[in-house]
Structure formats: C-alpha cells, structure tokens
Image (cartoon, rainbow, N blue to C red; front, side):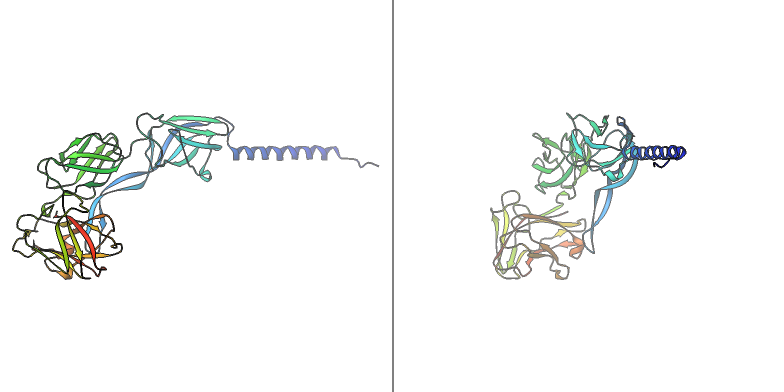
Amino acid sequence: MMKKINRHSTVAMILLFVMVALAYTSCKKDNEGAAGNPVITKVRVISKTDTIKDVDHRINLDSNLVYDETRVVSFDSTVVAGRLNNQYAIIGENLLTTLSVSFNGVKVNFNPALLTDHSIIISIPNDVPYGAGQSNQLVVTTKFGMATFAFPILQPPPTITTFSPVAAGAGEIVTLTGTIFEGVTEVKFDAVAAEIVGTPTKTQIQVRVPAGIVQAYIFVTTPGGTSRSVGSFGFKAVLYDDQFSAGWGSYFGYNSTRNYTNTVNVKRGTYAIQTIYTDAYGALQIGYNGTTIDATKLTAIKISIYGGAGTAGQAVQLVINGNYGKAVRLELSEGKYTDYTIPLSDLGSPSDITEFVLQSLGVPVPTTIYVDDIGFI
C-alpha cells in the first residue's frame, strides 16, 4: 500500500528548493560579477616614482655625498596618463571577471586576489612602450567583453650612468651614457648650455664642453624631465692629465717601476701611468719637490685606476702628504677602470697638497695597475 504524501509538505519542500536555488544563483552571480560588458571610468595612481632632492647618501662613517634620488612613494589621485614603475587602480564596472589588462598592446600583471567588480590594481612595468607612435590605449578584457580607455604612457626621466672623459677642455667632446635619452632637448654643465654633437641615441649623447668649465655637474633634459649626473665633471686642480701639471715634474716611487708615458690601457687621451709593484708594499709616489696645490677651496680628489691581471679582490691605499694615519683603501677592479672620488676630509683635511701616494696593500708581486686622470674638485 502506497504511503500517502501530505500535500502541504510537498509544497513546502518545493518552496524550500526554489529558495536554495535562488540563493545559490545570487551568490554565484556575486562571485562572478555582473554579466555585462566592462566599463572603465577613470584611473587612479596609488604609488609613483618621484625625485627626492638633495638626499644624503652615506659613504663611510666620516663622509657622505648629497644628490637627488628617485623613489617609489605613496600617492592617490585621478590621472589621465601613466608612468613606468607606478601602481594604479583601474576604476569602473563589471571588472570582476577580468582576464587581461594591457597598455599600448603589452599585457601587464594584476593580482586576482585584489580584483573587485569596480577596480583592478596593476603596476606598469618597464617593458611597456611609450612616446610617439603608440596606441595610447588601456584595454581590459573580461569574460563578458572588452573596454578601452585613452591612457598614454609618459616618457620617464633620463638617467646618466657615466660620462667620458671625466675631464676635458673647452670644445672637446664628452660622451654621456645612460638610458631614456629620447628627444633630448638640452644638456648643461651646471647652468651653461652645451652643444649637442651628431645624432643622440636612447643611450648615448655627445656634447662639446662649453668655454670656462672647470668643474660642473651635467644635466640632461628630455620630454620626461631633467636629471643630474651623480658625479661632477672636470677638476678644479689637475695633478696628472696625460702629463703632470707644471711644477709636478719631480716624482718618485719605491719598490715599483713606473712608466709615465705608457700607451696601454689608457682611459682618456694618449697616456696613463703604468705602475708595476715589485714588493708587497711598493708605491707610486708623486711630489715632495716644493710644488703645492692650495686645497682650502677643494673638497675631494678624483682618480681613475685600472686593475691589471690578478688584481681582483686586491686593494691599494691612497695617502696624501704622508699622512698614513688617514690612508683610504681603494678596491681594485681587474680588467677595467674604476673612478674614485674621495673626500679630502677622509685624507686628513690638508690645507695644501704636497705629495700623492698609491701604495700596495700586500698585493701579489709583480702586480700592475694603470692610473689616469688625477685631480681635485
């Protein structure tokens, strides 16, 4: 005999099933986002790269160097264009099912965990193209469609990594090496404009040294902004530049052999000083002949040293006026030149310069180094 089913119980069960189904559908819809075409209404910057002026950079316990520094900083504002390495929030509707985000045709990463129906958090990486000839389009593709938004990528500020030579006379050519030099409009030595020679590239500019420049920072201006070289160009006083300055013709050395007109591994010009240490504590010694350099208005010595074979991990020490209690250790780089800028305060704060010494610090013998462009700023 069949069991009789209560009509009211059946209706209740059906109603309960419908309610559960509706709740599940609603929940599923919330999790998947609205089933409509995506819309981009604006873009907000969350963090950006910014130039912090005159930042103290510690060199050692006794000295520091002050120059501008580029950092990523927090920020929040609606923007109409973007920059590389900045973080942005794309604001709009129906964004929860986002599949991809691209700028100028290059896809960028986004964090799905931070994705909502109204925002996407992204960072614009270095490989996104910028400048003339780009689509200037932000494109968001979702499960239900695609949205485009006019959003050009701005050119970043230039970066000066090196310049060569480190010192030169008026009218001579200096080559600047760096990044993002596109569209360069001006190069200055401090406040004095320099003539740009030839056709600049993205990574190199050649300029002619203006008259009257002894020592200056170099500034490069492009559509992305203006940047300054970390180190300064030139010398206020020169000790060796292909030849010794007048009055410094008497020079010595001990436990070493020296060639002052060497033409091998020259950094700039025709000659460099070749020094072969024949003893673990040999030295290149210049001075003590009655000639001096007034150091009261000088702040640092600049020198370039090329490490010969076997100098990796080795070092020499720089000593001024025989003050070995204030010697500065200089690490050598095998097979290339390294530019050193040492504050005179680290060398005993001399009021005048009477002697210059580069002494070996127990390097294997024989060891060869090459020295070029010795001067003061």
